[in-house]
Image (cartoon, rainbow, N blue to C red; front, top):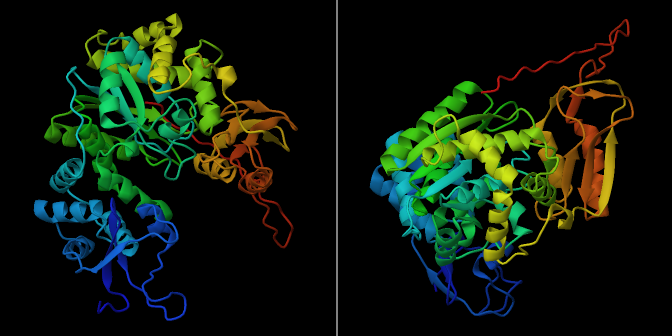
Length: 494
């Protein structure tokens, strides 16, 4: 074939194909055989002995455009389309995908470029068009753990007579995405036809966006972002809006959690996100409204798929759910009700509360669950959480002064979330609460003993909850004088 080391080849099966970079071995393989890395085998669905077609291919021109962006230059519409096309067709290697993500992270796109990127991503896949109008949607930019409000907002809005086909994401660096949470309740891998049918019949759906061929380039980009733990600004905005445009959303509410250790740490950045989402929405023909919400600590007490599902169902059932879950869910659902004209301005939140309290939201959720292949009679008591538990207790007395969201997520992931559906943690104490020495701060859950043990060690190392008056660090001096630090964090709630 005349192929040398570091050349590019196209590996094809009957259904899929992708580009790969060649390495040469004289000992590992026999003539007529090729070996592939695990990620390639997974992407193509290969197993030992499968037949594939291999052909030499040229370097994609889009690599030049990625380098152009790395150098800080503006990309044209056609250059952006070429990049997205090569991403969708798997013509870029893992290293080249990392270069693209890094370029997007280092060099910002302007609004024109972002709009072109969004439409290129939309056009790369399926567009779901509805006969029933108008189409409402909701999305949170993330960064705040425990944000299970979608499971309450969707049934409230649908119960009010509006249609909200919600496609959700899986976790990238968080403890769980909405799709991870709902997956243990019902099937989230739906076709475009299923999303259309269920939404038009029932008024709502909660599906995994990656399970249907909408904006497929986005899911490939997300996989490249994951090991780098970066989320480029323009890519994030384009990713959200591409998937909303692909489901024909006409009215969109965006939740922007703001606070320390979130994606949006300052009010200034939160307002920039809001302005840019609204501006991009205008270019795409989507009416966008944004809500800047408090993200200084988790929403509710539960962090992790099953634990969050249980907490959401407690709220739907009218049980003793955390006030932060109820307040945020009803406030955001209320904005959507006002956008849809079914509630007067300023009355949406109360209408959402009434729908929740009446049991109509629970009834609607059970219809959605049944339509998506789940048990319509499911209750919070049926949701099984991690078999093994451990309580983290306070060694001192004091008031909870700070909760580190990122550290809680690290602990939840160490416990196995989101792959282990029952893994996660529950906060026994939140900000401002008095804690006695020996009281439980938070409880860990896992279905794996070893992961639980490792997470306990990590929790003691990170100490994600700090109490006012705690000794943060002892730095000895010549006089052996300990240094005591008192921390305070004031977060403005908008």
